[in-house]
Image 1 (cartoon, one colour):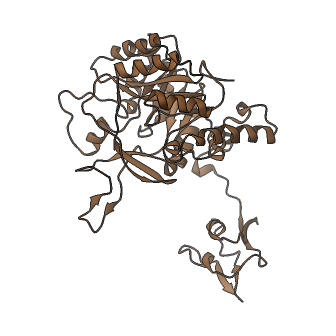
Image 2 (cartoon, rainbow, N blue to C red):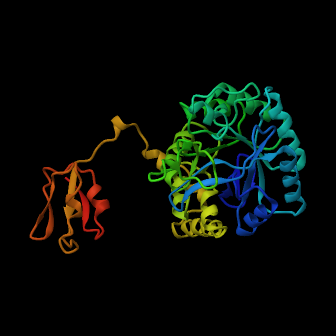
Image 3 (cartoon, helix red, strand yellow):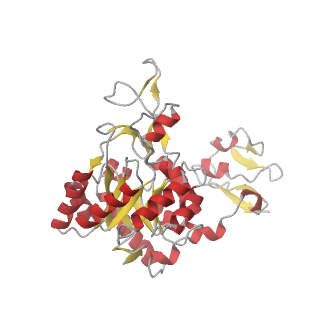
Length: 394
């Protein structure tokens, strides 16, 4: 059992708030698949527009979606109540945001969901598809528009004020979900922790992206069934490395636990995320691409790794990578160079192509590397399909 900021979870795998957590059927599927919890689709007090999911998608690479359907308060409360009526085992986390002018509305909203049976509140300080899209297009907000989602999450003082308001209103755990677009997400986290945050939820990436365009079709962006285009939330495998970064960034600056989502496609990615400082991982896009079997594979893969490596639990390696983290000027570069195993080398010449490198040549149909010219970058190691190149310390 994992104690995630006061929320008890049977394993470290949670369903992230998104298109796979919007209905009771989806929550039941997540429960059957073995997820320890699910954060329901974002609940909004007031919606300035309605929309159904549209997305540019390249499986196992990226998804960009500029619009999706959010839940109204009544819909969200009924979803929580129905999950409890059906006695689902997974923890029900409510992802919410307020579109009202008063910060106090966050507290009132959170209290309604606590009364409905929610196990935790996830404050949405990250959704980019509302205020942020307008701001990045240079458009003024309308008189009825209230900054929300990712714009709210860029302001440490406001994020902390919202966190405190909800903490003062409920007894269940409060989990701010941070935006990677903040100038310093670590400072936002520190202020929210001071305000009483029990844990944090983080997601990687620049938040917004744009799809490729049809170069033979007047540059029309490649979204389906849309008259026009907008920047959209960017998810999927492509943001994994940004999620590693923000997970490590937040984990080293706060004392409360972290949940990380964004780019987790398999159990190895989950282990890596945990070593970067996440006590819990959450998934959405990989389930959209490959179904609920993803969850079972994650849970079993993590369990197998823990057993094979002799760990007592995942807690034994949370943040293991952070001991190696430093700034660029303090990396301590080790002198070395690439070497070739001529038995493995087939002379394909792929290692001679990098435009920045003068160290590699072909001699007698085999790669040869001049150690005096080698930069030690190791790019040739990754290029070699024969695994014939390794790095050697000088």
